Structures are given as structure tokens and as C-alpha cells.
Image 1 (cartoon, rainbow, N blue to C red):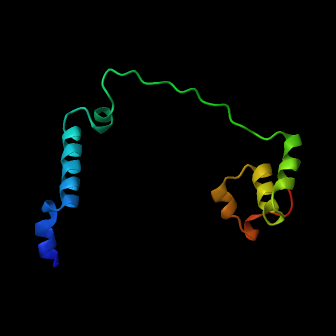
Image 2: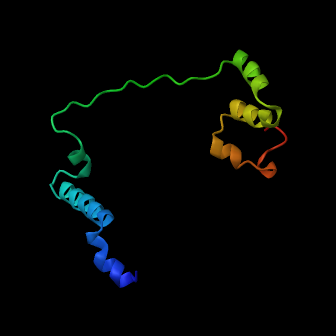
Image 3: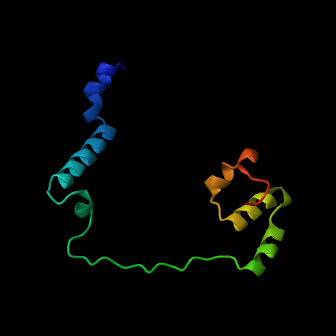
Length: 104
């Protein structure tokens, strides 16, 4: 099918009709004056407050048994994560040049 045929047949396919219906519903919700986030929320329904959980940290005496269960090839990475508090992305970006050998 050439691009001109595909463009002219687009709204008449099931996929085109579905995306056209979603687009028009989305535009109607946005043009109602309430904005999209408010249009998605049921009016008059109270928001449920979810209490935040306290973060879970390993205690000092728990670190050694946890690291003992980690496979040896990953132990240095896990120890660095536990003792430095780095996240996954920060650990992956570590290079030998970015590690200081002597303490400050």
C-alpha cells in the first residue's frame, strides 16, 4: 500500500478508529475547562490518604551475614552499595578513576 493510500484509509481501519476515538475523548476532556488531571478524577470523591512507610535499613550487625550470602563476584559491588549508600545508576557509572584511594 502506498503512503497516499494508507493515509486516505487510516480512519477507516479498526486501529485508526480506535486511536481517533481516544484522541477526540482526550481533547474533549482537556477542553472542558477543568483540565486533564481533574477530568480523570471522579468529582466529589475524597482522596485516600496513604501513610508513608518508614524506610528499611540494615543494622550494622546485619550487614556481614547479608554480604556472606552474596555471590563472590558481586560482593564488592554490594558492599560498596551498602557502605556508601549509592544507587544502582551511580554504582554502574563508577570507574577506577572516580575512586579515591586515600581518605580525605
